[in-house]
Amino acid sequence: MPSSEISVIIVAGGQGSRFGGERPKQLALLAGRPVLTHTLAIFEAMPQIGEIVLVLPGNWLKTIKDEAVLPYNFKKVFSVPGGAIRAESTRRGFKASCGKLVLVHDGMRPLVTPNLIRAVIAAAQERGAALAAVPVRDTLKKVADGLTCQTIDRSTFWQAQTPQGFHRKILLQALANTGIETATDDSALLEPLGKNAAVVLGSARNFKITTREDLSMAEALLSAATLVRTGHGYDFHRLQLGRPLFLGCLYIPSEYGLLGHSDADVLAHALGDALLGAAGLTDLGQHFPDNDPRWVGISGTDLLAEIMAKVRTAGLELMNADLTLIGEKPKIAPYRERMSTAIAQALRVPITTINVKATTTEGLGPTSQGQALAALATATLRVNPFMNEPLYK
Ligand code: MG
Image 1 (tube, rainbow, N blue to C red):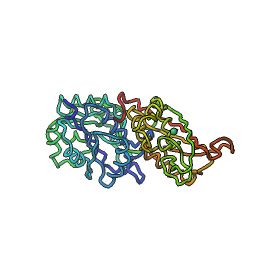
Image 2: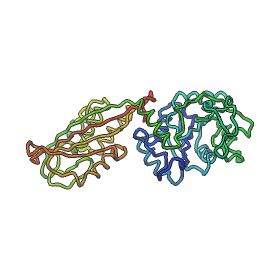
Image 3: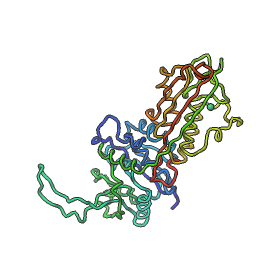
């Protein structure tokens, strides 16, 4: 089946009442990125998947898109507003999809593996419908008023997970049935039709993040298996009377500006070199040679955006960057917050990822006499070890 014929509906329409907090749990950070972004990245990277229909709560749709989707350059993802109940959210996602095989996956199961997804696809293709599930491990008790009243034989009980996969015609039929609006998963919609779904052995790791404790467990699992790479960068530019001054992706009113064939944003250049170094992608001079007319006058903002795209193509994401400006003037305190924000926007990362500071050189050397500015930067990137392909293509 060609990739364009498999759609996945990522159901993330819930408000997360058990999670607490004012913001939706889809945006809670896991390894530095929104939980939902992890889920999307796994499906985005699978060549079998043609499109990803993301179902979001209507009142948070724009915020979630802006923070968890747009910064990551997904090519297959588009969003639709969800409904008040699970079946309605799936219905809306289904309407927007076009695959002959349709997968449904919970947005809050970010640790699903490509292997499990492939196994569900194969079983659904063969049997018409399939789901990931795990056998119940603990003894099951029926409890009333805090007291046990019965022990249930657990041997035939399984816990349903996602992904679940369906031939389009079968899911269309199941969703047309409006008598089962209490269903909490999609394979339950088949039961009134007298149809069964094949069970594929899921994984304990593929749990659904419902509470803060679940989020901590996911964080521990990811950090235990995460590879980290660091890089550093240094840059130096002369100051010249009458040049505009660009620093940390900001224009700063000043009599003196930095000299260079670009906008000479010394902070952005040091950070760019640190990012390329951490990613093992050589240096600024290789990617932006100063004899190439394409890069004449390039801004720090555009330069960092270009570099971050290369970093993401290599399957890496920025955990944090620390920047130091070396010079007497300008004092950066009044600009510090706007600089961090501008740099974070250029890289499309959370603002807390970027720290900017400054130091002087005790009245010695060109950086203390207003002749030049220098900058240092370090960047720490992380790799997602569950992926054999780039995270963001
Ligand atoms: Mg430079």
